[in-house]
Length: 394
Image 1: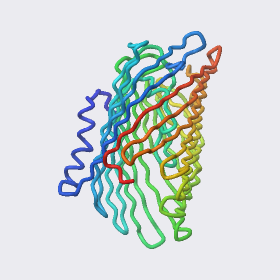
Image 2 (image 1 turned 135 degrees about the horizontal axis):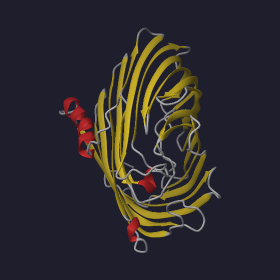
Image 3 (image 1 turned 180 degrees about the horizontal axis):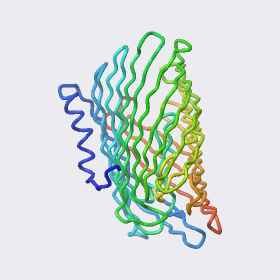
Image 4 (image 1 turned 30 degrees about the vertical axis):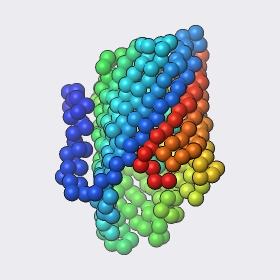
């Protein structure tokens, strides 16, 4: 059984820092601070049912600094960040959220090592109602949120995902990967926020179909721990291609058998398709996945999810941003967790009137529906702010 002992955030944060000290102690470092201050308004902060809305408005500040090494082979990057809100009309909703994101990589002509990690300590308004940037790279959808807000609560979250890839010959490759994540809440709220964890590992064999495309066959194994332990195993086939340094695509299909300790096994299809394409002035990211994983409601769900982002640089000084995230969760077993549908769409802009200074603004619309609730819920959110980046190159 996985360890359920709650560990303080500073312990988790020290793991990546120790890795950095071993590998990048003598490297050249680049430091990039970023400070944003502005005003936020939300007409349904908790995404409650009609009649239970909590309206907030007030100041928001987001401060972070990125430390990264400058090396052609071995690199380490880490970004500590804090986000603070102050709502004079609803002071109980004020929060200070802490984040630590980073990664280590070591690349040679035949071998690639990558160790991304993240840690967060945040209010459940943020953890359970993710934005358009939630999730990782292509094929790495965001997981864990349940969308429930019953009482004020906070979540500690940690995830690390090392991977190793090696070119056996000019046409054949092998890959190994693993990941571990753990979420702990200040208060255990049945059906809404319960501690959970996930451990997964996989091994893959790849064949280059062209100079830029690879066909992978991968075996997978998982252990989820929510209110009970669940084991899972499966396999998948994936094709991916690299059009250019910043443009790539993939297609993935497979199956996974999930077996809780106190219930029958269930077989689920796992799949994904998407790509990222970049030009001089435009970037498009689209990722559609079907995955299985734990959520904070205390169960394991099958999740359909679409993530979409579009960036368009109108000029060197003005840019438009758009994003969306749509998901549907359905419990893998016949339990008490109802089917959940969630969506968020966002539009934003950035006007850089000086190299270090810019004006940013965004609007997003959230919508959520549970099949056991009498109505759906939605919210409107506005943000306007000023950003200062003293080390920005252009």
